[in-house]
Structure formats: structure tokens, C-alpha cells
Image (cartoon, rainbow, N blue to C red):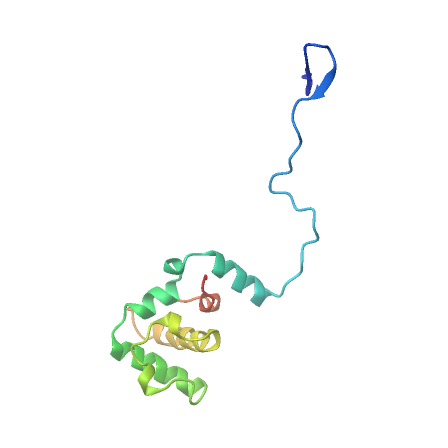
Length: 126
């Protein structure tokens, strides 16, 4: 058994080192809803790892027109004609969620998009 005590030249015992808690929480963990968890988790990720952002931004204006039109059917007046061509990050969270739902509907139509997007992709890192 090894000792955590270091002997000095005058034979008095001194602490070998201070104990520091690493990755330990001493405070209470706050509970959060699943939506809050999704938001926190996505904000800690890099934006370029967000598949909804990547796929929406690299598509043509015609594709974005289709997505925004389909999203407008879900919620009338959510998008305006001037917003076609804007990047994913320029929309607020609720409208990004509508875009993701519309892309999920469109993904069934062809192979141009991945099978599904996560609704939590509407949250971006700061």
C-alpha cells in the first residue's frame, strides 16, 4: 500500500497533493424537458455537423421554394417570397422546424435527401 504522505526533511507529515475533483458536480443537476435537452445538445455541436442546415443550404433556390411552399401549407404565411434563397440559419427556431418537417415529407419523394432529419436540428450553436 502506498502512502499519500510526503515526508519532509524534518520528519513532519505534509500532504502529498491537494485533492481536486475533476468532472465532478457538487451542485444539484437541474431537470430539463426533452426539448430543452435537444436545444442544449445541438448548441454544443458545431453547425456544420447539422444535417438539416447542410442539406438545405446546398440546394438550389428552386428546391428551397418547394420546401418553403410545402412548409407554408403547414402554417399559412410562415414564409414570404423574399425569403427564398436565404440560408437555414437565418430563420427562427419555429420556422426551421417547419422547414425540417417539409424536407422530411420531400425526402420520401426522391433520393436527393437523406431519409430523415432530426427535429432537434432546428437548434444551432452560438
